[in-house]
Image 1 (cartoon, rainbow over the protein chains, first blue to last red):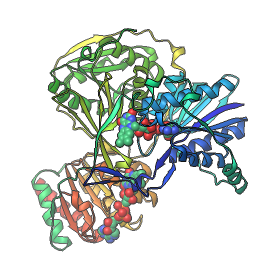
Image 2 (image 1 turned 90 degrees about the horizontal axis):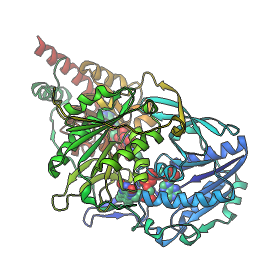
Image 3 (image 1 turned 90 degrees about the vertical axis):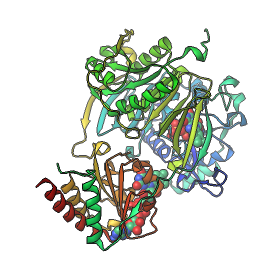
Length: 270
Length: 341
Ligand SMILES: Cc1cc2nc3c(=O)[nH]c(=O)nc-3n(C[C@H](O)[C@H](O)[C@H](O)COP(=O)(O)OP(=O)(O)OC[C@H]3O[C@@H](n4cnc5c(N)ncnc54)[C@H](O)[C@@H]3O)c2cc1C
Ligand SMILES: Cc1cc2nc3c(=O)[nH]c(=O)nc-3n(C[C@H](O)[C@H](O)[C@H](O)COP(=O)(O)OP(=O)(O)OC[C@H]3O[C@@H](n4cnc5c(N)ncnc54)[C@H](O)[C@@H]3O)c2cc1C
């Protein structure tokens, strides 16, 4: 039996986010909100382990009330229950404060049955920091296993998990002690399509909401106040100054360009 | 607990990343960036080297600009595991109190920095592309792309120390190596126990035949959806062959299955900084640009004069790549031969 928690974040579809160049503010209107793509793979991984070893999967999200949507998505994929952490006091949390709040919720879940595994995505596609997973692992004292691309197996008796981590040009096979926190990449699995009954069950399920008062939290460590980093300004990416168009038919243009690159010794003979 | 005022934190630190004694080049790039920050603040630049049997890298760190190197050697630090590395780095920071700590935004650097910043209770800015000191406040201004590269943000860590940041490989230029430059060495012993490592590395499998050196390539010939088919890659291979370059790809070309994901340049791929980047049949989406706009020279070949890639290209040729690329290959062959003759 494995007690598992999956952290899922609702994110804007970043392909659609833009900066208004006049006001230097984010244009978020009309941008669809989705489940962070890596987190969907994290849910799938937990559900697969449940099918193999038995256990329970809790989906956990911090966000505004509409983040319920991503929790229903997780339920449709096979999570057993969902908890939403929602409170105005959480707004503006950076990764240090976010991991503090999520870790407190995982501790609360663990008071019912101790948690063996926590899953996160490799990173969220909006903030893109990849810092929340390591933050939670550090706060809980769990074994930290990032960039997991395969789960070889869990040995419940010995309290161990063996995974493969995706590194630059390499794959690392590593065995870690439970409890552990995994952050996962997309190679880990193929997402399943939720069945119709599962979707109906997910749509009807009640989602537990916890506010700051339901958790054991130091008010100085959450939200803007609990966040050491602050955004000083946001702006559109600076354009690299454009250069020169080379005229002529392909042969002429090629001759001119090659002469420029060879003469300036940018491309030299080896 | 006694509180330490920010003024007691001094100096700029760079984490020297190594795996099995092999240094990650981003470490030297960070020493270059760190040198400028340290000079702006009028403080020392130090490298932090953790591992086993890695003392040989100390002189390299000096040569790339470190005034001092903190070295912790311990068998537990042989293969990288988060817990002992984080413990050692946290202890060093608590003992010597740097005001700034930089790490590479590699998988190892991101794994470690998130754990260390949390244990220290300080701020961490991810994946920076720009670092600057505000002379008025002496604060580190950390600029990074967010929302998939569509937006840039400048982040501050005002009240907590050290100010921590990770920086993507190849974003900062490699500083010149000053052969024979000497610095100070501080060896530190930290009591580490194997049981506290929590994990055992069983094996490391090299993924063979992949473009793992793309981020160090000097010449990249990259293709996009405009190639139309995998067969057309041959034209790019011929050009790359003449120049001793490496192939690269946009995400569209990877998704079409023409090249494996390891070749993808951009926000969700690799950041590159070659001398010359050929963008062939690539439109120039922002997510692609963030991965290659630091190239010294960008050559764009595209049949659409309105393609955004022309806005960043040093040189652009409007035309069908099926005609332009073979003409380039032939011209390079001719002109390079003429030069060496
Ligand atoms: C412009 C901008 C720049 C920012 N830059 C920084 C910065 O440099 N440093 C910093 O500390 N903060 C930064 N933040 C704040 C940061 O985005 C938030 O703290 C955010 O809540 C978590 O960070 P992330 O999106 O990077 O998540 P990541 O750390 O990339 O997320 C990894 C995984 O953690 C889990 N997770 C993350 N958030 C949640 C959640 N709310 N609920 C459930 N699971 C979750 C998911 O499994 C996710 O896949 C920035 C915010 C903005 C708007
Ligand atoms: C979150 C997120 C992350 C992303 N990450 C990345 C990333 O890391 N890297 C990346 O590349 N993309 C990334 N993308 C995708 C990106 O937005 C673009 O969709 C992608 O870069 C487009 O690839 P392309 O330029 O090859 O294709 P297109 O945009 O389709 O451009 C093809 C170009 O080829 C030209 N062309 C066609 N035929 C010819 C011809 N015969 N001769 C010459 N020119 C021709 C066309 O004029 C056109 O400009 C990401 C997107 C999102 C949302």
